[in-house]
Image (cartoon, rainbow, N blue to C red; front, side):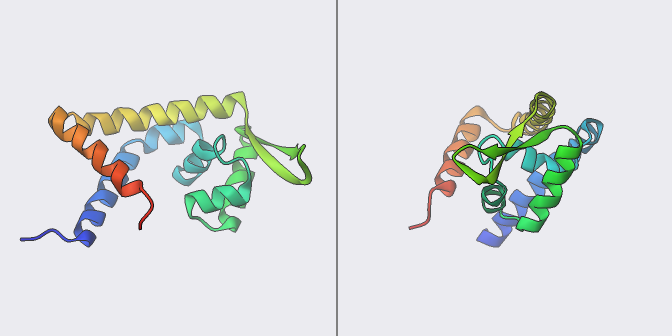
Length: 138
């Protein structure tokens, strides 16, 4: 039986969903919904809402809602961009950094628990494969 791309994509999606579901209680304890977490985790690298939408491949309107929620929770604040006074830049608050770090630690722990079931050489190979898959298509 050959394994096609759709099967691999489905298995990968199921794995990510299972890991995220296993961390849902921790996210809820932090006051985060899963999609808010992804926005929070990306703010430092992509501080502009349009940039976040593009990076996370979600609609700008959804980013607006998630950012509004994160601001209300005290995890993110909006600042005027000194380089362009018409733009707002998003900045993590100390509480936002702490919540992001705790959520990432929870995800890492759960994913590591699953990775522990495969041999170290397979884990290294998985790392190599994932990096290769993230390279731009030619």
